[in-house]
Amino acid sequence: MSTRYFFFGTLTDRDVLELVLERPVAPTALVPARLAGYRRVRILRDSFPILVEDSESSVDGVVFTTASAEEDARILFFEDYDYDMAPCRPVLADGEAVEATFCGAEDGVLASDEPWDLDRWAVRHKDGFLQLSKVYMGCFGKLTPEQAEPIWVETRERLRAEGILVRNPELAPAAEG
Image (cartoon, rainbow, N blue to C red; front, side, top):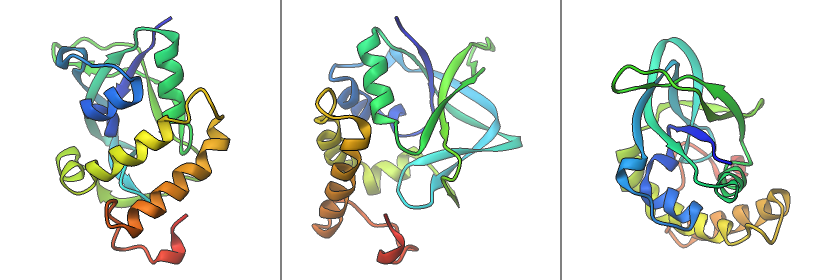
């Protein structure tokens, strides 16, 4: 079993995807694509993005096809909170539209007004996010996503307190969760 995904955020970064999959990913495995009808913004309480519907916009990302059901399970574990899987039809650079799945925001997940940019995110948040993601993905196969979520939150707060993970400046500490 394999699934074709449209990635638009942190999983477009090969280091993040390799950590999630626990294997190297060839640069050619990430095929540039564009998804119409959305714009990419930062999620309100964290550094990663979500897509919001916007008929006048489109989002650049990549199409990636998993090699196994295990890889699908790892991606679904990583994307479990804040995201639901949804079908989409991104367009590749050659103009071909392909069937894919993307991780859309769950109902109730709040978006900021801030556009999200991978390069800006990498400079400010990537190192801490990789540390956080390594701890979380260490739970894969041992815990359910519901059981692992408190570990994500506890690790995120520890990394923020240590100055490794940057806190979003517009949020007061009591507003984060």
